[in-house]
Structure formats: C-alpha cells, structure tokens
Amino acid sequence: MIAKFKNIINSNKPVLVDFYADWCMPCKQMPPILKQVKDELKEQVRIIKVDVDRNPQIASQFQIRSIPTLMLFKNGEAKWTGLGVRSVNEIKMMVQAQIDN
Image (cartoon, rainbow, N blue to C red):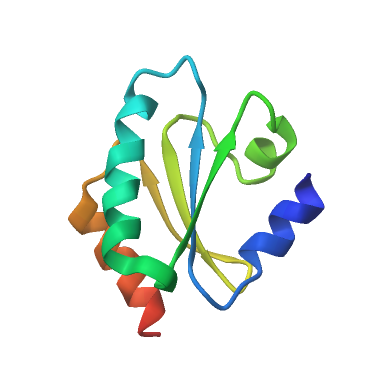
C-alpha cells in the first residue's frame, strides 16, 4: 500500500490527502468540504482519503499525530499540512498555489 501511495503523491498535479478515521467526529465534516474543493478545481487536483487505522505505516511515515490532517503533495513533496477541519477557501488557496507553481 505504501508503494501505491508514494506513486500517487509523486504526481506533478497537486494531490490532497485527507488522513482520517471512521470513529473521528471532526473527520466527518471533511467530505462535503473536499467535495466542494473538487467541484471547483475539477481535474487540477487529485483528492484521496487515507484511513489511519487501516494504513498505520503511511500515517507513521508522515507523522500524522492528530486527525483530520490534510497534506498537499506535489512531485512527492509535502507542500502544506493542515491540522483539523479546514475551510474550502483555505484549501483552495493552498492547492492553487501549487497549480500555479
């Protein structure tokens, strides 16, 4: 799974990763926010979800200590990390900075 994950984030298109767990109440607020981001940015961004309980090795490698955590990758590099529930506008601003870069 970690090899597949690294392959996904090693893209020149920004990849937004939502680290979450099913039991996490704040995590449940993220899907509609991420859907709005995707609806507005369309194919300019890829958004994936990683369940920290099912993928502890990925969570550990990226030092995920609290959830939800959003990480934005481009070309395999972490460009931004947002802890907790973030707003649509903040996420879009961070993604657009990488699209334009």
